[in-house]
Image (cartoon, rainbow, N blue to C red; front, side, top):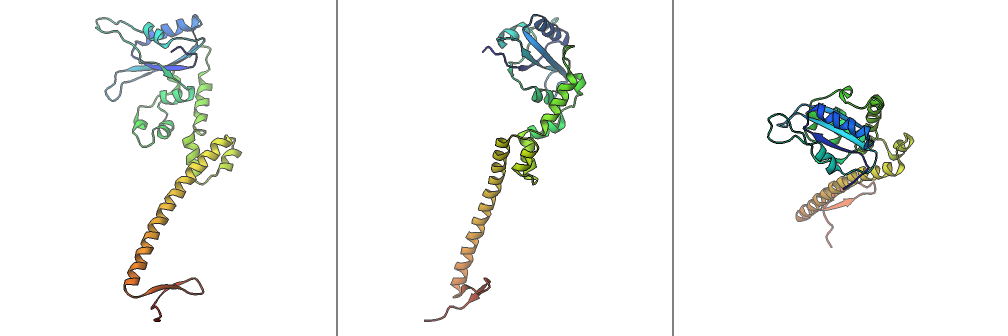
Amino acid sequence: MATQKPISSISYNTEAFLKEKLDAWVDAHIIQTYMYICHKGEDGDKDHIHFRIEPNKKIDPMDLEAQLREFVGSEKKPRCVRPFRPSKEEDWFLYAVHDEEYLKLKYHGGDEHEKLPYDWRQIVVPDNYDLEVAFIRARASLKHSTVALAKRIQAGDNALDLIMDGENAYVANALARAVYMDDYQRLQMEFSSLQDKYYQLEDAISEFGLEIVVDENGIRHLSIPESD
């Protein structure tokens, strides 16, 4: 489907071939800019290149994929790219360098944070693209992620604290409700469990011919029921 939104993919092309195509697309005003970084293969994958493009007009990703079919030496099959996917700059940037904080937030409980780290200066962009500004923007986005904000609430901040720090009021309140609801449900379950145990205790006490009474200070005592 044609799109004008930023998209990204993973390339198995040679770097020289991919860069030549990207530069040609910029010169032809097909895309406004691009960024890519070369990664070593991990977990059985081959060496590859993560790349992202910002279209200058509506483009058909499948047409671009076809242009990136590269025949290399005696290799029987052409090198190619994976299907394009929508791409947010900050997410692409932080994953591209395997930012440890980002991976821990994004893949909490998984092993994604164990990937090889890369330096942001290894990302290749056109001469007119300010890579350092993009890096600063990407790092700044970490503290505004929903996961990071939820962790702040769990640590004791409330929705008003987040709003005073410039966070969206709707997002702050929604996260606070979600976190507090988890606490409410946990307490409700604990209360129900204790209530069941209390009823069981009452039944056991009754079997011994006793009853629980509450004195004027609100303290419970065991008592022998008065006979009629």
